[in-house]
Length: 152
Image (tube, rainbow, N blue to C red):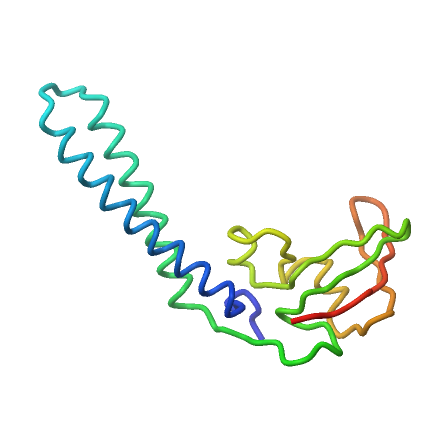
């Protein structure tokens, strides 16, 4: 199964909201560009800035639109075993707890506290249960962690 297109329901809604915000912001930028066109001169900095801003927004809108259209929403149904969408509390060897949610690659950039489904950390966690230990290569070192809890 290709994991790159997977997305959590929460992540899908966050990306939808981000797309709507970008579209509203684009409308404002378009109005600014129309106003900037009223200023005479070929090297109008306001117009150049507005055009660049609009170009950047169009690219972001197109990218998000494509991500949403090609995404497959996947829900986690269990708190017994770590899987896609699980919220995992894990502890390192010093006893420091960390929390992360295993999400699709397209969600990681828009959400904090997430672990990409394709990352070594997620790969090491998949299928584990509370209390189980796993190792992950961090730089040149192997770090050992223990699963403290699993949530949805």
